[in-house]
Image (cartoon, rainbow, N blue to C red; front, top):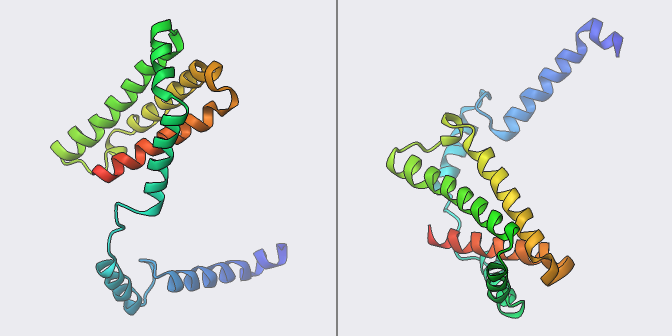
Length: 170
């Protein structure tokens, strides 16, 4: 290894592999103008993925089936009547998470026209993620006595069903 570093051969090998990789991938740094034209043509010809696909339908149907058979709304209603502090805290955190997400999508992206709000407001995404994880933990604590070790799976399925349903809307 030391012999290669002294001779500069290692640097030549790295440069050669980098150039070959750029040529194969059609990276902007490559000198081949034909590959750049081909990638531009591919981007123009690519069609957006359809909103309704098997994956989306599966998660939505799984969420509906679990809502019915696990009596999800009954468990939520009983938790609200008990006055469970973890359910209330999870609900507040979930509302905070949704409000930050709606602020990003509706106000920043649609109204202000800021498409890349991650770079302009870098704290918004971590705040949303942290509040969502905290809400998920609170909901798991709340519903653990009802569904036991199935609770994380049920809540994850509900979450994915909701995400897929929202993705169909917009």
